[in-house]
Image (cartoon, rainbow, N blue to C red; front, side, top):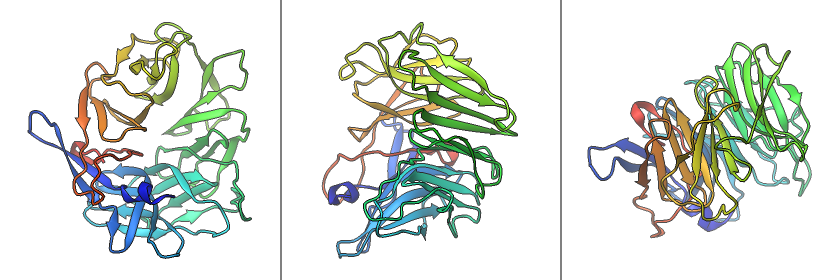
Length: 354
């Protein structure tokens, strides 16, 4: 983990402003440096004024990084830190998912084999390292990468990833059930709706099919419905798909780039009201970026940013029909640079973007 990567990391808060040319003003709610320590956060999630961020802190002495969860109950004004248990003989942690479920419950996921869960407002963090076969020898990189997590409430949730399959719980994360442990399928985003209802994206390993699938259940995976995402209509065969993500009900979105020139094409957003069976017209996203990544979705708000160039975000509050371009200027970065990488986004109370 390099100096440059850590040094420019910080948490930003966007608040609505009446300024006509800048709809949002940005403020630092967690600095990148406190005393002699520097902080790097991979993931952020908000539930009202409860914020949780997963990452690490370090200094320049020969002491190891300390991996931690930072938690705030007052919208980032003050923070508490929960150190995460760490073996010095394994590869560094990297966090891919986080969800602050309610004021007491939260989960962070990642690699190697990370599922940390809290039911006491992050006073403590629990890690089921035995069941998930955490790395135990020097240089070992286990294949499990839990990239996505979704909890409907404090008991029902699921985790998935490209190399770990799909697992779910209705025991508040204390025990997990393996739906599919196969690593040859590309499990992507997962959604938990409660009362035994789950949805999961999966890319099949059959290269001849050229179809992605959505698996759904209403009874804790006892029976399964399958929808195939057909590349027809606006999603023609030459469309490069960056990411699917869930909207309300059976609505899903597809963020892609038409044609084969993915380095130069404007990204587009397509909408399906029926889990991929039919698609709306393509909606253009109004800035040329090479590799767009979905940052956040809540109710009707969609935020997209580019992982390669920090400082620019686009937002829509009407399902992608119109867009606002936001230049995210980070104040008081002591290194003097205005360029940085945005790794995650979440929504707090009163329209705040974190």
